[in-house]
Image 1 (cartoon, rainbow, N blue to C red):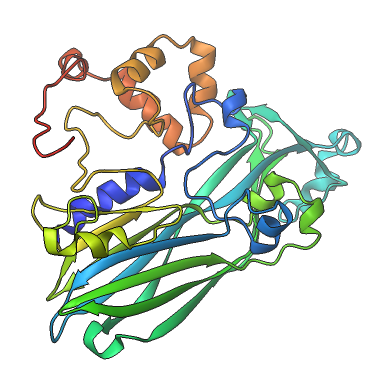
Image 2 (cartoon, helix red, strand yellow; image 1 turned 45 degrees about the vertical axis):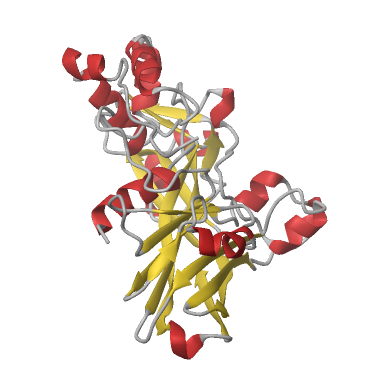
Length: 359
């Protein structure tokens, strides 16, 4: 398995939809997340009548033999609410009196605002994200066949305060407050022999995060306790996965019997390799590749790289400033675009590729 190639494809899936053109928090489309593969708390899903998913199921086939080992890794984003707070009116006239509160956030000293400009930089409310992953302990398929296991995971809640200082006075004039809700979940795994040397693997991802008053909670509240852009990487040692898109004749019936819910398993890695599968909430072909003409991730797969790049180039200075101050990923898009060579842009204009074997 070419792990770097697989990780690049998986990262593209992980951040698809993280931020959309025009890459500004003030844009309506960026004020509510729509990422693929979001698994909300079970209680919220039930309260919504199942319109929001709390589980994801992957089923795939493995040709195994003695010594075949399966490795499974589940990845997702854990959202972080970043709020901006300016010094409250009752503190503005006496900055030194509030200085001893610089390491503790108190709403009596700071008031949350949509944005705040300090030292020529605009700080904005935004949802950041932290990459999370959980692994199922490796196991030998032959010994595990017919069995099941559950791997639980959890990530604690956190809250941090970042001081924003006025460069002229050295006084605190605002803070960035980052809040992250706790997550709890599990990965359930079963393996069943369905023929000579063939095994069906079933992987279920469950969001078991508690959410009180789920029926009265907003989607935004549930999202802060959701697994976002969830996907699974499966790898076998001394064995082979069977393509579910183009299975060999003798395995077509078994492949058709695989039930995948909210996800689409495809072979990944070098063309022809069968030791790794990516189960993605986005529909892909076997052996997906990132276009070599692409200068980098634009996070908005509903658009074409060339069109997005040209649109970014036409943003006003004020729009670029807001984009630059959104977060590190938006800033990198802008900086990369502003120095993009003309020949690189021309390469995005159009490329003919073979579609042999695909219909």
